[in-house]
Length: 157
Image 1 (tube, rainbow, N blue to C red):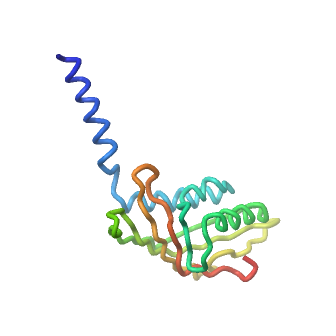
Image 2: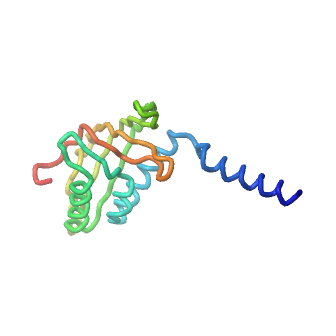
Image 3: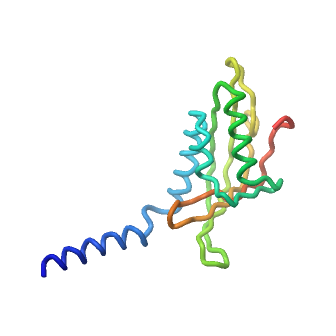
């Protein structure tokens, strides 16, 4: 009898873990941005792109493969990358399929360094780009970036 009670308790713990969120959504969105920033600082292409949905599409029509290529090329071209963000705010909702979505508004600045010389890649000193990032939540992989609007990049990128 006690064997069955122990099994039921273990099953209940697993179900709670799978079906109840761990932490608040706002904190999870901030964690995504922190992980992307840290991965960029380490020039870790996979660490950055793992936070993008395979169905990613931005306002210019670029999809996941294009974004991954741009990130990989930037990491190869520059000795170092420094990314920062501020003013993060997010609004949460659900789409027509009942999936959780978020629209995050954030100011970003990304700088590449070549031989110690800084090159602004996104935003500008004193005036970061204000972008809107659309994220979708998956029960398995958490929040993923599904789209970005408002991104201004230099002409050569």
